Length: 533
Image (cartoon, rainbow, N blue to C red; front, top):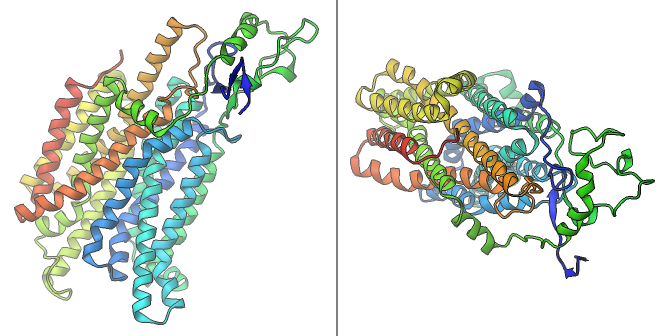
């Protein structure tokens, strides 16, 4: 590090979109096509999630994973995500890659997702082809499959935060709201398509015979979909790199060397350069700002400052994180055990009976119907996401948040009280309302909080910069703090619901617990979450 203003090793970093030089710069309006391209990342991610939900248990059973390791597989990834998500969010806030702050992390995590898919869907086949010793084959197959599942879950959970922060960085306030709705829309579509392809019996089709097994077929589709969606996503909207302002600001210009020349203009992602001859009165402040910026120290994000920023976050951010945790705990409590609930309670099957018995076949039938229920949830999530844009003008974000939790609580409550096949499938549509709510409303509130903070800062200091590159708690960290609540919910559900089911002796307690958590969430979002007028 060089020195500026007499202070060794001090630099100020900010995005070229910041208003530290030319005053507040608002990103241009993005076309619907660009926002759809950006949303394809959520389509690909959710498609692969659905494939994992449909196939990960059969894969783990087929490789002979010991029951004692099941908790390791399901809990290791969310624990890592909960601990490291804010670190990745903060690191992306301070990333100085020429490609931008978020896209390098998105690309890295997408590659990790692809590698995880390859390991857990193909690991057993590769080991079987290369290893002859049965004992060594079992150990390697189990190890590779476990690594694949954990790696995929880890990357898929992590990638949501950088994707949201990328959207917030490059879009105006109106486009952020539109983008979040498109994210939820394509999340539902991706999940529905993944569940549909997972329900097909590929082993008896020509493609299954050509590629080997249904696991290889689903890897082929998943890898193709993931690669295509993320290439489109990463090319959707140009992102602005974080730059060293103290170095990038040119020295004061003479009248003959006017800063209005096209060579001297800074370009902000896809924002057009300032046109020649356009007199910006704020350029007169450039020299003074240069001197002030040189005196500002670089804010290096250490683990201590990271924890401090999270602990000392404003109360309304903390309340939003708690409400998000309650919502995801309720949602995951139901979704992770839903197919088992259908098989045991609705269809009265027995998963512990011999595999050729009638009771076990009935249970399998219930699980298949449960997969169709999850597909209904995904489709309705997309449909509801489309109508959210119209509903928000009537009932606001508070109404959307409250209604999402309320309908989910009522739906799971009725399913627990009246476990009928047709009513349960119909009520799966209410799960889609909750899913869409969790993917959109909390992040809409984050954008509202950021917008309000930026207005307050501009009123207090006209030269304030909104890029987040020089603040300890940037947009990336706020998104990460919110999304790591999903991992914490997975930890709570994975560690607590198994105990509840064993204690109660029935999976009915799962939907009862989900309904109770949803009603608690209703009270919390109505009383404690802050809504910006």
